[in-house]
Length: 257
Image (cartoon, rainbow, N blue to C red; front, top):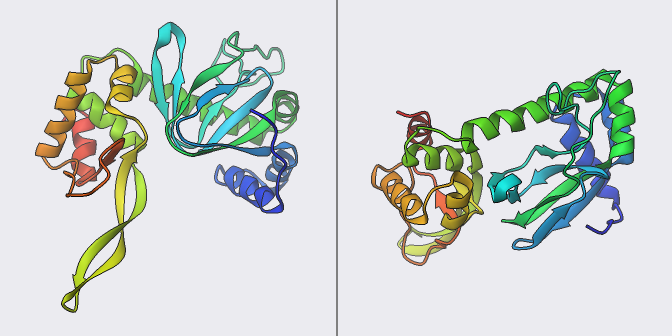
């Protein structure tokens, strides 16, 4: 990914992102000084040189190809980094050893328009070694990634419907969409808020969960039948889009209920 010159408003966006993790102002300022914003449009091949920099996915959806050609689907706030002490916990640091991930590149594709905050590994390494708040933030991020991997993408005895529901629940976020509604006897265009899991195709879901495409299609149809997912209205976008009708029910199914 080619470097992008940071515009003035991007410094505030970077600071806002790191502030979400409860860092003190001085830690946020130190990270903001060495960070940059990079963007990728939807449908692009993605190669992240994690041997050189850490990548924080601030917005968007990506498909990551891992070992044995397995796929994982990620949403914002995930951490892609290679300076973790993986002998203990991915993303943790100690004074004795910082081990590098032998995989120097992360490859995959963008499932939506994506925004990354990047930090050179040399800078992040130095900050993590001297600032406990930053080290703790990285440990928590990596632990979250590890837990999501275990919960969503490892071998499981859960049913396909449960597994598909878990991934869609994870990917869902509030979205504003335009709808046509009657008002005062006429039809008017307005906007409404809705939870939508968007980005992956059914083939992407199948690859991520190691399921057949027909199995995923059947699971999604069942989720629509029980009203956890909303069925599409005439003329609505249906590709790579899964509107949530009942989030509580979707969560219950994702937990095996």
